[in-house]
Image (cartoon, rainbow, N blue to C red; front, side):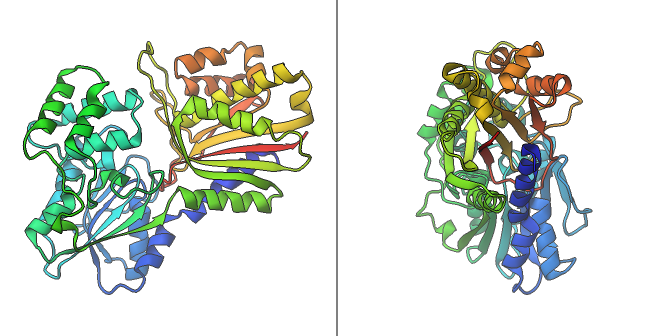
Length: 450
Protein backbone atom coordinates (compact mmCIF):
# COMPACT_ATOMS: atom_id res chain seq x y z
CA UNK A 1 0.00 0.00 0.00
CA UNK A 2 1.42 3.41 -0.94
CA UNK A 3 1.55 6.17 1.64
CA UNK A 4 -1.24 8.25 0.11
CA UNK A 5 -3.48 5.19 0.09
CA UNK A 6 -2.61 4.41 3.71
CA UNK A 7 -3.43 7.96 4.80
CA UNK A 8 -6.78 7.83 2.97
CA UNK A 9 -7.66 4.53 4.65
CA UNK A 10 -6.60 5.97 8.00
CA UNK A 11 -8.86 8.97 7.38
CA UNK A 12 -11.75 6.64 6.56
CA UNK A 13 -11.17 4.65 9.78
CA UNK A 14 -11.31 7.86 11.81
CA UNK A 15 -14.52 8.96 10.05
CA UNK A 16 -16.19 5.63 10.85
CA UNK A 17 -15.21 5.79 14.51
CA UNK A 18 -16.57 9.33 14.80
CA UNK A 19 -19.76 8.79 12.78
CA UNK A 20 -22.35 11.00 14.52
CA UNK A 21 -25.38 9.03 13.34
CA UNK A 22 -24.12 5.77 14.81
CA UNK A 23 -23.00 7.41 18.06
CA UNK A 24 -26.21 9.36 18.66
CA UNK A 25 -28.42 6.46 17.60
CA UNK A 26 -26.80 4.28 20.23
CA UNK A 27 -27.08 7.03 22.87
CA UNK A 28 -30.84 7.68 22.46
CA UNK A 29 -31.99 4.17 21.55
CA UNK A 30 -33.92 3.66 24.80
CA UNK A 31 -35.70 7.03 24.75
CA UNK A 32 -39.49 7.20 24.41
CA UNK A 33 -41.11 9.75 22.16
CA UNK A 34 -39.49 12.52 20.12
CA UNK A 35 -36.61 14.69 21.29
CA UNK A 36 -37.11 18.45 21.25
CA UNK A 37 -34.46 21.13 21.16
CA UNK A 38 -31.67 22.35 18.88
CA UNK A 39 -29.15 20.49 16.69
CA UNK A 40 -26.17 22.63 15.71
CA UNK A 41 -22.71 22.13 14.24
CA UNK A 42 -20.82 20.32 11.52
CA UNK A 43 -22.20 16.99 12.78
CA UNK A 44 -25.77 18.22 13.32
CA UNK A 45 -27.22 16.51 10.25
CA UNK A 46 -25.67 13.17 11.19
CA UNK A 47 -26.71 13.53 14.81
CA UNK A 48 -30.32 14.13 13.80
CA UNK A 49 -30.10 11.16 11.43
CA UNK A 50 -29.07 9.04 14.40
CA UNK A 51 -32.06 10.26 16.41
CA UNK A 52 -34.42 9.40 13.55
CA UNK A 53 -32.91 5.97 13.07
CA UNK A 54 -33.51 5.22 16.73
CA UNK A 55 -36.84 7.00 17.29
CA UNK A 56 -38.44 7.13 13.85
CA UNK A 57 -38.82 9.82 11.16
CA UNK A 58 -40.57 12.19 13.59
CA UNK A 59 -38.06 11.57 16.36
CA UNK A 60 -36.51 15.04 16.19
CA UNK A 61 -38.31 18.37 16.65
CA UNK A 62 -36.43 21.63 16.55
CA UNK A 63 -34.09 23.66 14.32
CA UNK A 64 -31.21 21.86 12.60
CA UNK A 65 -28.33 24.30 12.08
CA UNK A 66 -25.54 23.25 9.69
CA UNK A 67 -22.74 24.86 7.67
CA UNK A 68 -22.77 25.08 3.90
CA UNK A 69 -21.55 22.00 2.04
CA UNK A 70 -21.96 19.30 4.71
CA UNK A 71 -23.32 15.97 3.48
CA UNK A 72 -26.62 14.41 4.43
CA UNK A 73 -28.57 17.57 5.29
CA UNK A 74 -32.19 16.48 5.82
CA UNK A 75 -35.16 18.04 4.11
CA UNK A 76 -36.75 20.69 6.32
CA UNK A 77 -40.12 20.10 7.95
CA UNK A 78 -42.43 22.33 9.95
CA UNK A 79 -41.28 20.61 13.14
CA UNK A 80 -37.59 20.54 12.17
CA UNK A 81 -36.57 23.53 10.04
CA UNK A 82 -33.06 23.50 8.54
CA UNK A 83 -30.88 26.61 8.67
CA UNK A 84 -27.69 26.61 6.58
CA UNK A 85 -25.46 29.22 8.21
CA UNK A 86 -22.02 30.77 7.78
CA UNK A 87 -18.75 29.24 8.93
CA UNK A 88 -16.08 30.21 10.02
CA UNK A 89 -17.56 33.71 9.82
CA UNK A 90 -21.16 34.13 11.01
CA UNK A 91 -23.67 35.57 8.55
CA UNK A 92 -27.31 36.65 8.53
CA UNK A 93 -28.36 33.00 8.60
CA UNK A 94 -26.20 32.50 11.70
CA UNK A 95 -28.14 35.32 13.32
CA UNK A 96 -31.41 33.69 12.29
CA UNK A 97 -30.15 30.39 13.71
CA UNK A 98 -29.14 31.96 17.01
CA UNK A 99 -32.54 33.53 17.44
CA UNK A 100 -34.28 30.26 16.53
CA UNK A 101 -32.16 28.39 19.08
CA UNK A 102 -32.95 30.96 21.74
CA UNK A 103 -36.66 30.78 20.97
CA UNK A 104 -36.58 26.99 21.31
CA UNK A 105 -35.07 27.28 24.79
CA UNK A 106 -37.19 30.28 25.81
CA UNK A 107 -40.34 28.18 25.42
CA UNK A 108 -39.59 24.70 26.77
CA UNK A 109 -42.12 21.91 26.17
CA UNK A 110 -44.66 21.12 28.85
CA UNK A 111 -42.94 17.93 29.95
CA UNK A 112 -39.85 19.90 30.83
CA UNK A 113 -37.18 18.23 28.67
CA UNK A 114 -34.89 19.74 26.03
CA UNK A 115 -32.03 18.29 24.01
CA UNK A 116 -29.04 20.06 22.52
CA UNK A 117 -27.14 18.12 19.84
CA UNK A 118 -23.84 20.00 19.82
CA UNK A 119 -20.78 19.69 17.58
CA UNK A 120 -17.89 21.67 16.14
CA UNK A 121 -18.66 24.88 14.28
CA UNK A 122 -21.59 25.79 16.51
CA UNK A 123 -19.92 28.99 17.68
CA UNK A 124 -20.11 30.54 14.20
CA UNK A 125 -23.29 28.83 13.05
CA UNK A 126 -25.58 30.35 15.69
CA UNK A 127 -25.07 33.85 17.05
CA UNK A 128 -27.25 36.39 18.81
CA UNK A 129 -25.13 39.42 19.75
CA UNK A 130 -25.82 41.05 23.09
CA UNK A 131 -27.49 44.49 23.03
CA UNK A 132 -25.10 47.16 21.83
CA UNK A 133 -23.46 45.04 19.15
CA UNK A 134 -24.52 44.38 15.56
CA UNK A 135 -23.79 41.26 13.55
CA UNK A 136 -21.21 43.31 11.62
CA UNK A 137 -19.47 44.19 14.90
CA UNK A 138 -19.51 40.56 15.95
CA UNK A 139 -18.05 39.43 12.62
CA UNK A 140 -15.31 42.06 12.79
CA UNK A 141 -14.26 40.92 16.26
CA UNK A 142 -14.20 37.24 15.26
CA UNK A 143 -12.19 38.08 12.14
CA UNK A 144 -9.64 40.03 14.18
CA UNK A 145 -9.24 37.12 16.59
CA UNK A 146 -8.95 34.48 13.86
CA UNK A 147 -6.40 36.49 11.90
CA UNK A 148 -4.57 37.35 15.09
CA UNK A 149 -3.81 33.72 15.92
CA UNK A 150 -6.09 33.53 18.95
CA UNK A 151 -6.43 30.09 20.50
CA UNK A 152 -9.85 28.42 20.46
CA UNK A 153 -10.10 29.13 24.20
CA UNK A 154 -9.41 32.86 23.69
CA UNK A 155 -11.81 33.04 20.77
CA UNK A 156 -14.61 31.35 22.68
CA UNK A 157 -14.00 33.40 25.81
CA UNK A 158 -14.77 36.49 23.76
CA UNK A 159 -17.70 34.91 21.93
CA UNK A 160 -19.32 33.85 25.21
CA UNK A 161 -19.32 37.41 26.51
CA UNK A 162 -20.75 38.86 23.29
CA UNK A 163 -23.58 36.41 22.65
CA UNK A 164 -26.99 35.52 24.12
CA UNK A 165 -26.75 31.81 23.21
CA UNK A 166 -23.23 31.06 24.45
CA UNK A 167 -21.42 30.80 27.77
CA UNK A 168 -24.26 28.99 29.55
CA UNK A 169 -26.82 31.58 28.53
CA UNK A 170 -28.95 29.10 26.58
CA UNK A 171 -29.35 27.01 29.73
CA UNK A 172 -30.11 30.18 31.71
CA UNK A 173 -32.85 31.11 29.25
CA UNK A 174 -34.44 27.66 29.52
CA UNK A 175 -34.32 27.86 33.33
CA UNK A 176 -35.86 31.32 33.32
CA UNK A 177 -38.73 30.10 31.16
CA UNK A 178 -39.33 26.94 33.19
CA UNK A 179 -37.37 26.27 36.39
CA UNK A 180 -38.15 22.54 36.17
CA UNK A 181 -36.78 22.03 32.68
CA UNK A 182 -34.11 19.39 32.17
CA UNK A 183 -31.54 19.79 29.40
CA UNK A 184 -29.58 16.90 27.93
CA UNK A 185 -26.57 17.80 25.79
CA UNK A 186 -25.04 15.20 23.45
CA UNK A 187 -21.62 16.32 22.25
CA UNK A 188 -19.22 15.58 19.40
CA UNK A 189 -16.18 17.43 20.78
CA UNK A 190 -13.94 19.57 18.59
CA UNK A 191 -11.95 21.00 21.50
CA UNK A 192 -8.66 19.61 22.87
CA UNK A 193 -9.37 18.31 26.35
CA UNK A 194 -13.15 18.22 25.71
CA UNK A 195 -13.81 21.30 27.85
CA UNK A 196 -17.62 21.57 27.89
CA UNK A 197 -17.44 25.31 28.46
CA UNK A 198 -15.50 25.72 25.21
CA UNK A 199 -17.20 23.28 22.82
CA UNK A 200 -19.53 25.45 20.75
CA UNK A 201 -18.73 28.20 23.26
CA UNK A 202 -20.63 26.23 25.91
CA UNK A 203 -24.30 27.11 25.27
CA UNK A 204 -25.46 25.05 28.26
CA UNK A 205 -22.24 24.79 30.28
CA UNK A 206 -21.08 26.94 33.21
CA UNK A 207 -18.59 29.54 32.05
CA UNK A 208 -15.45 29.80 34.22
CA UNK A 209 -14.07 32.69 32.14
CA UNK A 210 -14.55 36.30 33.14
CA UNK A 211 -15.29 39.57 31.46
CA UNK A 212 -11.75 40.69 32.22
CA UNK A 213 -10.32 37.67 30.40
CA UNK A 214 -12.46 38.47 27.37
CA UNK A 215 -11.19 42.05 27.38
CA UNK A 216 -7.60 40.83 27.64
CA UNK A 217 -8.11 38.38 24.76
CA UNK A 218 -9.21 41.28 22.57
CA UNK A 219 -6.44 43.54 23.83
CA UNK A 220 -3.78 42.67 21.29
CA UNK A 221 -6.07 42.48 18.30
CA UNK A 222 -6.17 46.11 17.23
CA UNK A 223 -8.14 49.28 17.89
CA UNK A 224 -10.97 49.10 15.35
CA UNK A 225 -14.36 50.57 16.13
CA UNK A 226 -15.98 47.14 16.45
CA UNK A 227 -13.34 45.96 18.93
CA UNK A 228 -13.79 49.13 20.95
CA UNK A 229 -17.55 48.64 21.08
CA UNK A 230 -17.10 44.99 22.05
CA UNK A 231 -14.74 45.88 24.88
CA UNK A 232 -17.20 48.52 26.10
CA UNK A 233 -20.09 46.03 26.06
CA UNK A 234 -18.09 43.46 28.01
CA UNK A 235 -17.15 46.07 30.62
CA UNK A 236 -20.80 47.00 31.13
CA UNK A 237 -22.95 45.71 33.96
CA UNK A 238 -24.81 42.53 33.15
CA UNK A 239 -22.28 41.33 30.59
CA UNK A 240 -21.01 38.50 32.83
CA UNK A 241 -21.92 34.91 31.98
CA UNK A 242 -23.52 32.39 34.42
CA UNK A 243 -20.95 30.64 36.60
CA UNK A 244 -20.78 27.03 37.91
CA UNK A 245 -22.89 27.71 41.03
CA UNK A 246 -25.78 29.17 39.03
CA UNK A 247 -29.02 27.19 39.64
CA UNK A 248 -29.75 27.14 35.89
CA UNK A 249 -27.30 24.22 35.58
CA UNK A 250 -28.97 22.06 38.23
CA UNK A 251 -30.84 19.94 35.66
CA UNK A 252 -28.31 20.04 32.79
CA UNK A 253 -26.34 16.94 31.79
CA UNK A 254 -23.62 16.54 29.15
CA UNK A 255 -22.38 13.38 27.40
CA UNK A 256 -19.34 13.49 25.08
CA UNK A 257 -19.89 10.82 22.42
CA UNK A 258 -16.68 11.35 20.41
CA UNK A 259 -13.58 13.49 20.65
CA UNK A 260 -10.05 13.79 19.33
CA UNK A 261 -9.16 10.86 21.56
CA UNK A 262 -11.63 8.76 19.55
CA UNK A 263 -9.87 9.78 16.34
CA UNK A 264 -6.40 9.06 17.73
CA UNK A 265 -7.48 5.63 18.96
CA UNK A 266 -9.07 4.76 15.60
CA UNK A 267 -5.98 5.91 13.70
CA UNK A 268 -3.70 3.92 15.99
CA UNK A 269 -5.80 0.81 15.50
CA UNK A 270 -5.66 1.15 11.74
CA UNK A 271 -1.90 1.70 11.69
CA UNK A 272 -1.25 -1.33 13.87
CA UNK A 273 -3.38 -3.44 11.55
CA UNK A 274 -1.31 -2.11 8.64
CA UNK A 275 1.94 -3.25 10.28
CA UNK A 276 3.13 -0.04 11.95
CA UNK A 277 4.32 0.19 15.54
CA UNK A 278 2.77 3.34 17.04
CA UNK A 279 5.56 4.73 19.18
CA UNK A 280 3.68 7.83 20.33
CA UNK A 281 0.06 8.96 20.32
CA UNK A 282 -1.01 12.34 21.70
CA UNK A 283 -4.26 14.29 21.81
CA UNK A 284 -3.00 17.46 23.48
CA UNK A 285 -1.09 19.20 20.68
CA UNK A 286 -1.67 22.94 20.52
CA UNK A 287 0.37 25.92 19.37
CA UNK A 288 1.60 27.56 16.14
CA UNK A 289 1.12 25.18 13.21
CA UNK A 290 4.58 25.75 11.69
CA UNK A 291 6.34 25.08 15.00
CA UNK A 292 4.37 21.87 15.52
CA UNK A 293 5.18 20.76 11.98
CA UNK A 294 8.89 21.26 12.55
CA UNK A 295 8.71 19.44 15.89
CA UNK A 296 6.90 16.48 14.32
CA UNK A 297 9.47 16.30 11.53
CA UNK A 298 12.32 16.18 14.04
CA UNK A 299 10.56 13.47 16.05
CA UNK A 300 10.07 11.39 12.90
CA UNK A 301 13.69 11.94 11.84
CA UNK A 302 14.91 10.62 15.17
CA UNK A 303 13.15 7.29 14.49
CA UNK A 304 15.29 6.50 11.43
CA UNK A 305 17.78 4.18 13.21
CA UNK A 306 15.05 1.57 13.73
CA UNK A 307 14.45 -1.01 10.99
CA UNK A 308 10.72 -1.31 11.88
CA UNK A 309 7.72 0.46 10.36
CA UNK A 310 7.01 3.20 12.90
CA UNK A 311 4.31 5.82 13.32
CA UNK A 312 3.69 8.95 15.35
CA UNK A 313 0.14 10.21 15.96
CA UNK A 314 -0.46 13.74 17.20
CA UNK A 315 -3.99 14.98 17.76
CA UNK A 316 -5.15 18.44 18.75
CA UNK A 317 -5.53 21.82 17.11
CA UNK A 318 -2.86 24.29 16.02
CA UNK A 319 -3.14 27.96 15.07
CA UNK A 320 -1.91 30.28 12.34
CA UNK A 321 -1.15 33.93 13.15
CA UNK A 322 -1.30 36.13 10.03
CA UNK A 323 -0.83 39.46 11.84
CA UNK A 324 1.77 41.56 10.08
CA UNK A 325 1.50 39.52 6.88
CA UNK A 326 0.97 41.59 3.76
CA UNK A 327 -1.85 40.03 1.70
CA UNK A 328 -1.94 36.62 3.42
CA UNK A 329 -2.73 33.72 1.14
CA UNK A 330 -5.10 30.79 1.49
CA UNK A 331 -4.97 27.54 3.38
CA UNK A 332 -5.30 26.34 6.93
CA UNK A 333 -3.35 25.14 9.91
CA UNK A 334 -2.93 21.56 8.68
CA UNK A 335 -1.49 22.56 5.32
CA UNK A 336 0.85 25.02 7.03
CA UNK A 337 1.92 22.34 9.51
CA UNK A 338 2.69 19.92 6.66
CA UNK A 339 4.60 22.54 4.68
CA UNK A 340 6.77 23.44 7.68
CA UNK A 341 7.39 19.74 8.33
CA UNK A 342 8.54 19.24 4.72
CA UNK A 343 11.00 22.12 4.99
CA UNK A 344 12.36 20.78 8.28
CA UNK A 345 12.82 17.26 6.88
CA UNK A 346 14.82 18.64 3.97
CA UNK A 347 16.99 20.73 6.28
CA UNK A 348 17.66 17.69 8.47
CA UNK A 349 18.58 15.63 5.40
CA UNK A 350 21.00 18.28 4.15
CA UNK A 351 22.66 18.45 7.54
CA UNK A 352 22.94 14.66 7.81
CA UNK A 353 24.03 13.80 4.27
CA UNK A 354 22.26 13.53 0.95
CA UNK A 355 21.51 9.81 1.23
CA UNK A 356 19.82 9.99 4.64
CA UNK A 357 16.20 10.25 3.45
CA UNK A 358 16.75 7.52 0.84
CA UNK A 359 17.55 4.86 3.44
CA UNK A 360 14.34 5.53 5.40
CA UNK A 361 11.15 6.86 3.83
CA UNK A 362 9.38 9.51 5.91
CA UNK A 363 5.82 10.61 5.19
CA UNK A 364 3.95 13.25 7.16
CA UNK A 365 0.26 14.08 6.77
CA UNK A 366 -1.93 16.49 8.70
CA UNK A 367 -5.67 16.91 8.25
CA UNK A 368 -8.83 18.24 9.81
CA UNK A 369 -11.34 15.54 10.63
CA UNK A 370 -14.11 17.75 9.23
CA UNK A 371 -12.50 17.59 5.79
CA UNK A 372 -12.06 21.37 5.56
CA UNK A 373 -8.76 23.06 6.39
CA UNK A 374 -9.03 26.83 6.37
CA UNK A 375 -10.12 28.94 3.42
CA UNK A 376 -9.72 28.09 -0.26
CA UNK A 377 -9.41 30.68 -3.03
CA UNK A 378 -12.69 31.80 -4.60
CA UNK A 379 -13.98 29.11 -6.92
CA UNK A 380 -11.67 26.42 -5.51
CA UNK A 381 -12.67 23.50 -3.31
CA UNK A 382 -11.31 23.31 0.24
CA UNK A 383 -9.00 20.46 1.21
CA UNK A 384 -8.65 18.53 4.46
CA UNK A 385 -4.89 19.03 4.78
CA UNK A 386 -1.72 17.90 3.04
CA UNK A 387 0.74 15.04 2.71
CA UNK A 388 4.50 15.51 2.34
CA UNK A 389 7.64 13.40 2.17
CA UNK A 390 11.31 13.81 2.90
CA UNK A 391 12.16 15.42 -0.43
CA UNK A 392 9.00 17.50 -0.91
CA UNK A 393 10.92 20.77 -0.48
CA UNK A 394 13.61 19.76 -2.96
CA UNK A 395 10.96 18.73 -5.46
CA UNK A 396 9.24 22.07 -5.03
CA UNK A 397 12.44 24.05 -5.53
CA UNK A 398 13.24 22.03 -8.64
CA UNK A 399 9.78 22.89 -9.96
CA UNK A 400 10.39 26.61 -9.38
CA UNK A 401 8.32 26.97 -6.21
CA UNK A 402 9.46 28.68 -3.01
CA UNK A 403 8.30 26.89 0.17
CA UNK A 404 9.80 29.55 2.44
CA UNK A 405 7.85 32.31 0.69
CA UNK A 406 4.65 30.26 0.95
CA UNK A 407 5.19 29.82 4.68
CA UNK A 408 5.96 33.51 5.16
CA UNK A 409 2.76 34.55 3.36
CA UNK A 410 0.68 31.73 4.88
CA UNK A 411 -0.24 30.53 1.39
CA UNK A 412 -0.04 26.79 1.96
CA UNK A 413 -3.08 26.13 -0.24
CA UNK A 414 -1.48 27.91 -3.21
CA UNK A 415 1.80 26.09 -2.66
CA UNK A 416 0.34 22.59 -2.56
CA UNK A 417 -2.02 23.23 -5.45
CA UNK A 418 0.86 24.45 -7.61
CA UNK A 419 3.11 21.59 -6.52
CA UNK A 420 0.43 19.04 -7.34
CA UNK A 421 0.11 20.43 -10.85
CA UNK A 422 3.87 20.48 -11.45
CA UNK A 423 5.08 17.43 -9.55
CA UNK A 424 2.33 15.22 -8.08
CA UNK A 425 4.86 12.85 -6.50
CA UNK A 426 6.49 15.53 -4.34
CA UNK A 427 3.55 16.26 -2.07
CA UNK A 428 -0.17 16.72 -2.35
CA UNK A 429 -3.28 18.22 -0.79
CA UNK A 430 -5.64 15.75 0.86
CA UNK A 431 -9.12 15.96 -0.64
CA UNK A 432 -11.89 14.23 1.25
CA UNK A 433 -14.79 16.66 1.08
CA UNK A 434 -16.71 17.70 4.20
CA UNK A 435 -17.19 14.68 6.45
CA UNK A 436 -20.18 15.72 8.53
CA UNK A 437 -18.25 15.45 11.78
CA UNK A 438 -15.44 17.32 13.54
CA UNK A 439 -13.09 16.10 16.27
CA UNK A 440 -10.10 18.41 15.73
CA UNK A 441 -7.02 17.59 13.70
CA UNK A 442 -4.73 14.62 13.32
CA UNK A 443 -1.07 14.67 12.25
CA UNK A 444 0.63 11.41 11.28
CA UNK A 445 4.30 10.64 10.65
CA UNK A 446 5.23 7.31 9.03
CA UNK A 447 8.82 6.03 8.96
CA UNK A 448 9.45 3.00 6.74
CA UNK A 449 12.22 1.19 4.87
CA UNK A 450 12.84 2.82 1.50
